[in-house]
Image (cartoon, rainbow, N blue to C red; front, side, top):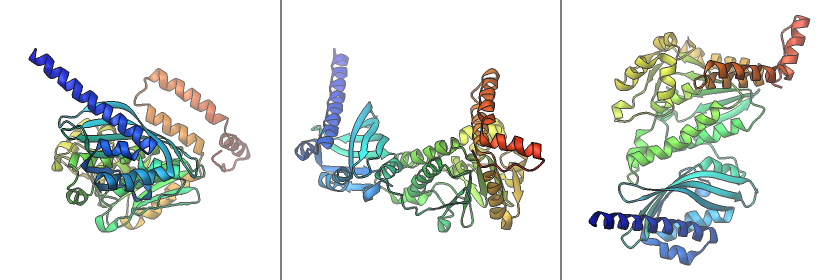
Length: 410
């Protein structure tokens, strides 16, 4: 009987929390200040995703601050509802809610469909004491119809080449929350710009990037290390998912120490040039961490399972010569020539058959999960599609005329 009572009490507490959260979302959609006052504890603490527009990201102390500085401010610019899909009780009693924000920006009319995770704490009286929000901040910015101002990445498009230059040289381009979000913002700009036919990723200063900025985590005592990493890795990983599916080929210019999650910028590329003396280090185990940036997927496929295990478990650096021998990079160049050589390579690709490149990228990416029969069928499908492009017609014409083809990407 005792066990049944405990289970019933647990279910009742869970149901009450779920009901309270649903009431919160209804109150926010209706702008019901009175209902919010009943749901939120006076000691309420909110944390909104860094990089959200209108300056609403960050910590907000007290229910009034959360209403005024986050919810009401967003409400003036968006007509959006939080639609929960899943509820899970965490070990510490907080409730994890996963769902999507759906709606539109009021002025632009642009649609917003952004995933969210909310972690919500409760007092003994059932009122909410905290809300940690993780959402796709770049999606909110784009719906608003504004270009997000970039602070940690220099981005430009010249002659059909999009250049993504990491720009925190004083921190050796260490990845903070801002850079993680801006990586996604830039990836989406690239994906949405049909004029782009090649991408160059590089870094200013002494390194491409030394990985996650540990100083940022040490300075933020309001959030656990794990929660901070989750907030950062979510937009960071989404950026690589977007880049993996664009039409344009990607070139990365690596130099200095390339460590931790920054290796993701290497894995994202189709072709990689490295300066003499470049070292690649996973670095995660030294911090008691498991890894991000897609390394546990990419590295075994690039250099082999045993070498990847050594790189992860022992933090064994991979020198440039080893990276070349093992297939992690394509070439080693003098440091003073790295940027110009990488730019020339990206420009060469930008003058190639972009639609064929897109199919090649997809075929190579998907080959890891397909059997041979499936891959052969996909090759036929891609071959037919590319054969009917303007670039293929130009190639045939150039062949007959005994001249070099002039591809337009069509």
